[in-house]
Length: 226
Ligand code: ADP
Ligand code: MG
Image (tube, rainbow, N blue to C red; front, side):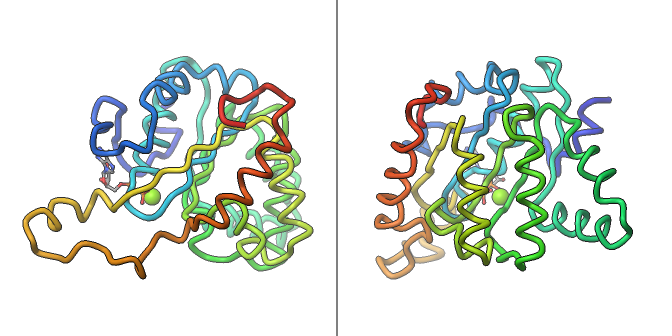
């Protein structure tokens, strides 16, 4: 029942995740997160990395673990989420919508950053993040580094306010490497390995900036990677 309510787009479990294929992820950190203490504490998890590295897989798997631990979970994509909020806003029932989005102990927002948000949408997203801040956990996946969220949210001031709240008590996992989807094809020589120019959007310069933001938030002690 709880699994149905969560609206996961697929069945993905931690048991099915090949950690050896993904050396940039620390299995211990994932097992730690699977214990769901971060959800009890209203902390956030950010899974960042290029397409195909397992962000959605891990977010569903961690969501399932949360449900097994007794927490309510809702899965959505950034696009669906802001479209729903914009619609509610237009119908003058944004308060009602925010209330509903504040209910699940864990809200998973997949695919933030594939499409940049309009300023209005970014402000709606900010309202959601403020509402859930320190009370409800969020798991966000993005193909953009946090330093690039200024462009995702159109407005750098709103982006900073969002990032500030999200990172305050957070676990940030940056996944690197090639798409798992294309691995098999690459191995059999069907497609060429990526060249330097095809690098992931999570660039090293932006990662350095991100590390600076993370250090800035360190004193809270709330996250293993914050
Ligand atoms: P992303 O969300 O990062 O774009 P996905 O989580 O959708 O990537 O992964 C793409 C596909 O590859 C999915 O079917 C997923 O189950 C699978 N996959 C990715 N990484 C792994 C892995 N390390 N072990 C097993 N399956 C993986
Ligand atoms: Mg995905």
